[in-house]
Length: 566
Image 1 (cartoon, rainbow, N blue to C red):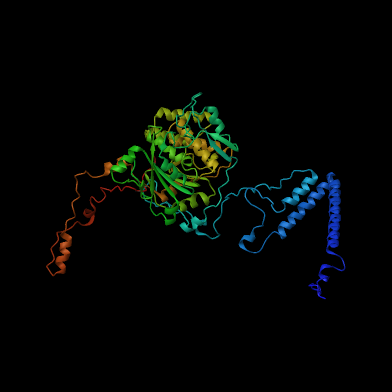
Image 2 (image 1 turned 90 degrees about the vertical axis):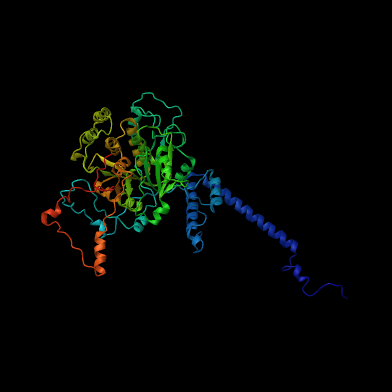
């Protein structure tokens, strides 16, 4: 009789080898408890022996080796682009092993230790220079002898072996150059300016004592020095040499190469750079600093509009100038450019009277990167001794003679001597300071800060103070410095006349140049239509023909033969 039960295999599914499900579950539970007790005994045994110093260290080393092998061989992942990095390791300022942290933490807890296996940050990478390939034309390039022209005795440009702009751009260093000893440079801010122990200075640059001046030449790993803008926490904001907020924000965007110049007192005309590559136009910041007087002229002449651009130049107007002397004011953007454009890597300064005619990347490659230098400036074309330079400034009435004498006497008491060959490989103590090429690293920033402090303390003639600052720094650290030939500088900048000279050279306002006589053209036309040719009078012959040809030489603005002393 059927009871409504499935007989075929239904009962057999409730028994496993003749054992009921309840009995099987009880057996598994008992087996599991035995295993857990075994693990607990093993763990207590490990802790008992791990507490001993030698055994504990051996045990920790074994775990570390196991984790290291696991990371190398197991955690690599597949061969996808993401799999090229080891999984679980974050490489930033430190390396942390994430996946193995529970295992390490358990072992460390058993040993009673607190463990942090974050590896130290990798050493920073620096640019250490390069050499051009063997056989490169620039490796064997030599300057040709100057032309033997007795009429041209002044300075002139000479050839320079530049790389093509594309190659120069490719060679731009990915990392900064090392800054010897000095790693962290900060600048002094004085809410209430102290004039205690005053020995020169200004409200803009502060009044550092002679003790502070001497300490600033003692190069340390971290330093804080006077460097202009002492009355504010941010240059250009209520510091003197104030700049509109929109211009400050624009300058902060300059994070690569900067070309800068300045015109104060409406002293020069703006010279538009020439032969600039498209890449440079897109990536280089061209900054022209002007005062309100120059801005007014640029607007009234129709050259400056609401865009604040004149050609490639971004016009930056400085207000509340700290000095009445335009030449001294010009030293602020020239020597303190790293404070105005804090994110820039490289800069080229050109005086307002100069026109740039070579691409900035070609200049940087030739005078900085190829030389593995962080600061480059040209030598004076004629003078190389500070004492001679001082006398030349006095003769040209460049500054008050008594102030020049006081500065020279102060430097003499510090040990300044006339230049001799004992200073080699330094070949000059006098720069042609109208062009400055540099990398913005701490040591070069310190150099221009201290150079500015000398200009602020003594005369504005920066050629006089240059060698004193340079030699004091070189006596402490290996400052990678490049003084190149003045004729090479004249290759990439052309000097123009100052604006007042251009006005004197210009013809009178009512003067109109008469057109040339049309007679020769009419003669040619009459000959073409068959008319009898007109008879010409007897012309000059021999020596008479040359009379008067040499009387007047036209002076052309922008000639490369002019003296650059200013």
